[in-house]
Structures are given as C-alpha cells and as structure tokens.
Image (cartoon, rainbow, N blue to C red; front, side, top):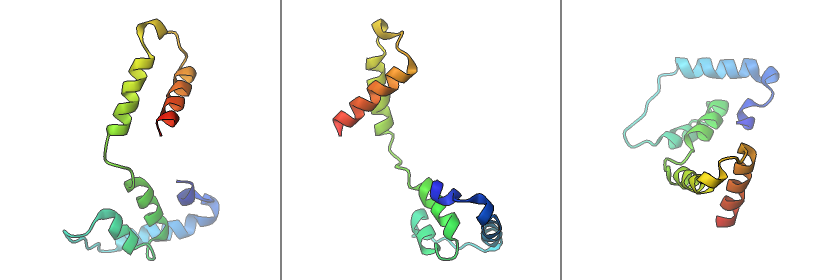
Length: 101
C-alpha cells in the first residue's frame, strides 16, 4: 500500500487524472480474463490503480492460515491463562508461527 500511497501531495493531480480516465474508459473484460491478469495488461495505462489492484486482489483466497492461527490462539488462551495481556498473546503467536515456518 505504501507504493500506491507514496507522496499524496505530489501525485494528487496525476492520480485524479488516472481515476477520471479509468471511470470514463469503457472496460472490456472477457470470460477468459483473470482479474490480476487484466490489471497487469493495463498497468501502462493505469499505473497507480494497477498497483493498488495488485496489492488488494493478490491476497490468497484460502482461510487455512487464519484458521490455523485462531486454533493455536485458542490453545494459548486456556482457562488457566485467561489473564494474559493481548501483547503477550500476540508475542506467543508470533513465536509459534515463526517456529512452524
């Protein structure tokens, strides 16, 4: 996101022009196109928007990682450990996730 945001004061006119150009452009999207592929193909026309789209749409669709983290968090927060602060729980989860890599 930092790549897209950059220095907002310097790029605001260019970004507004790019957004206006995108809004006023008739978009063609065939059934065979993939969303990220379309943005990659049009990255020369919409450089800032394609960066934003790639960062937002590039998130994995699987929930397996988040479910694994929730599962390990439930094992950390047992009845005898209910007084752990949120910072300590974050630290323990971070250590466990790095260990599993």
